[in-house]
Image 1 (tube, rainbow over the protein chains, first blue to last red):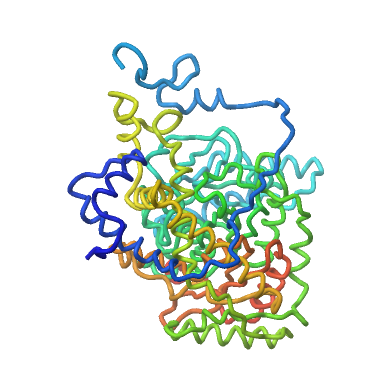
Image 2 (image 1 turned 30 degrees about the vertical axis):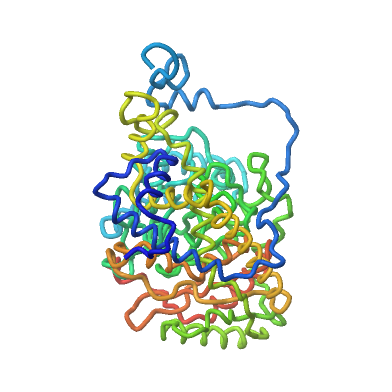
Length: 100
Length: 465
């Protein structure tokens, strides 16, 4: 049974699924909601940890390299792997203009 | 050449029973072996001349598949090698095939593969562990002497322990992640699975070191990991993790840990108990952070640049249909969990809180490493479970990683060494963790333990005969 105080309910799962560009079939929604609610409820134990002295938790500086042009295989890789490519570009359904 | 041919025969002998491989590259492998022979004949000294290596299918090997055990990358062939693969190739390695994994490295049993189930060579009704289950099974079954895995929350160490082989996760930043399909970018590391600590040290040493194609790969000298293996541990302080000895530990695992304490003392180390107070929260932290990073990393799989494409009605439905058809249930679950943790309104309470807890865990380890040179605990909470046993409840499966996740979150080097067989004939492993970039201490302690561990040398009974 989903925890009544859980932030995870069917509406939240539908919202998050649309953010993630994933479709959840209506029939799968209750079970998935229950699983996610249980996991989030387990994660909520982190609320018990006092946070004094905690830093951001990540290495903050990304080392940079010199901005120098070099060889790049991108176009070749795209042409070899894209399901539909036109003139070496990945082709997608029209987004802008008539018929979009 | 003969070594490569024997490797393909060895694979054929066991593969029908363990299903470790997603692709076996006989022709290309033999061609690579021919080229290595030519290089050796011309006087090149190659540290891995002709050594057959299997590679988890989430890493790029030029011209071979890289499906990540997912339908969304079916047919994808990278044109170049991952940096780590390229270094092994330059050293003379021969790549015999790509091994099975949990889809996108998400799982602890290899049951989440979209293609096939891999079986534990010690008992074919049981899981090999995950997510690098194919690599672990292939090495345990003696199909290959070495295989590569990747480890985000335990995916090298846990299957190594389940299959009775050595599995080594270097410190975060030691081995370039270029060419490893990203799951958790602040956690992922490539590492070796082998039958000995010495072999693991050799493969690690060849792969490690800075890489202009991975800004997180450290410029620190790799030192002498192979030399560390023979060094011995007189005077080393070994800290047994207090939180691992807490109530509720499986009786055989507890006995195994007690025996390990004694083994280290016999080897000349000083053995103490150390505490990492936030270690029990590590699973909760991990499933927020890793899922959040995965939700971001897997956004690129959208049917545009690679892989199959489902529906072309409009761009939005192209994305949704491709992703929904292409990803399996566990991957979807983690993407949803990660998206939730990063969503407006939940970000601070979930991702923010988890990252602060992660920092506190890292500091706990720093304090513990003032009192001990290495920290040990079991690799797995119990021996390999049966196929299908934990697939109903995701959370139960996640708890298999309880001992491996802390070192991942803190970026520490950690190795699993086979320790003993249970009464039921299944492997257990001991995990040895070191301070960040402290691979040499870890390898020295691992080699000393390996010498004294009561682990049999016969091949696993699931593939014997």
